[in-house]
Structure formats: C-alpha cells, structure tokens
Amino acid sequence: MPQILGKMKRVVILASGTGSNAETIIKNWQDREDVAVVALLSNKEEAKALAMAEGYDIMSRFFDREERKMGKMIDLITQLNPDLIVLAGYLLKIPTTLIDLFPNKIINIHPALLPKYGGKGMYGMNVHEAVYEADEKESGITIHYVNENYDEGNIIAQFSCNIEEANSAKEIQQKVLQLEHKHYTEVIEQLLDL
Ligand code: GRF
Image (cartoon, rainbow, N blue to C red):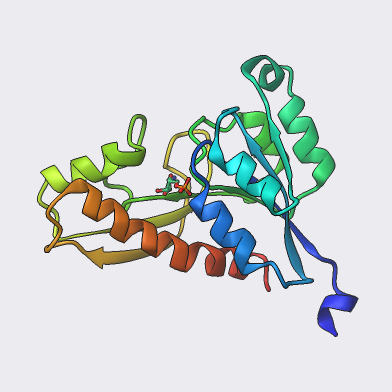
C-alpha cells in the first residue's frame, strides 16, 4: 500500500565502465514499485554499462565531450528529476553546476577506505595496487557525497574487509567488489528513505 500512496523514487546512474555495480542495483530493484533506475548515462561510448542497461530496457545515453560542455547531459538529468544521482564507476569530475542543482543528492562509491587511497588518479586497479604495495591488513569501500574535489565529499558509509591473505592487487579488487555489490543498494535505499 505505501508504494501506491507514495511517489516512486527515481535514480539516475552515471557509469564509465563495466557497470557491475549498476547491474546489481538494477537487478535488486527489478520487482520494486517504489524505486527505479530511470536512466544510465555515460561519458564512454564503449562502456559495457550502456549495453547492460539497455538489456534491462532502461534509458541509456552516451554524451561526448562537446555535448557535455554544452550542458546536454545536465539538461537530461534535470528533466529526469532524480531523487538521487548514483555514480558507479564514473571517472570524470562532476561539474559544479550539477552539484549545485542537486545538493546532497549525488553519491559515489570508492573502492578503498577514504581518506586513504583517494584523489586524482586513484581509480580502478591503481587503488588496489597502492593498497597491496602498502601491505595493508584491510581495505574496503567508502560511499560518500560528491563535491567539487575527487573523493573528498562527506562520508556516508564504510565497510571493510580483511586482506591479509590476499596475494595480489587483483585479489583485493575481487574482495572489495563483492563488498560493493553487497552494500551499495542498501545504502542508497537508506538515503531514499525506502
Ligand atoms: C568500482 O570498483 C567502484 O568502486 C569504482 O569503479 C568500479 C566500478 O566497477 N568507483 P563496475 O563498473 O561497477 O563494475
């Protein structure tokens, strides 16, 4: 009953790569009537995430540099009127225009325990290689608000895993990705009051 009375919450996902986090969220919400991914947008034409979203009949759009500079991606996001903008492996900096339009409504997931191993250049395997080289005993994920600096917005939630047994950066990546898939949806749902 509540979902009939309440408005359906709308999420826009931004992704530049594989989209395994995006796919996990989409799958988790397949039978939900109170929340939906309304679009997946990308800055990379070849991003697997775009084809993945299409496969679920979700609007998926690529915006090239020129279109982004013209504000076309921001225009579409504004039209879509999302309750939350979720970055899932989106590699570009978010323009301040978008941050100002959606205050505290843009979140990111980072594959390490910030403030360590964050900032420019700290993405993908670079993160896990740095963690491995530093001989850390644990790593994990950080879900945080997006501000104008890479990985510096307020932290919403962190989850950690033991990596003492990991023999390579790849193994750390796999462990951390499992944590991402386990927790990203639930944190988004909490933020949406679902
Ligand atoms: C994840 O490790 C996420 O933390 C980072 O980019 C990666 C995206 O993976 N921001 P996928 O595209 O969701 O598979």
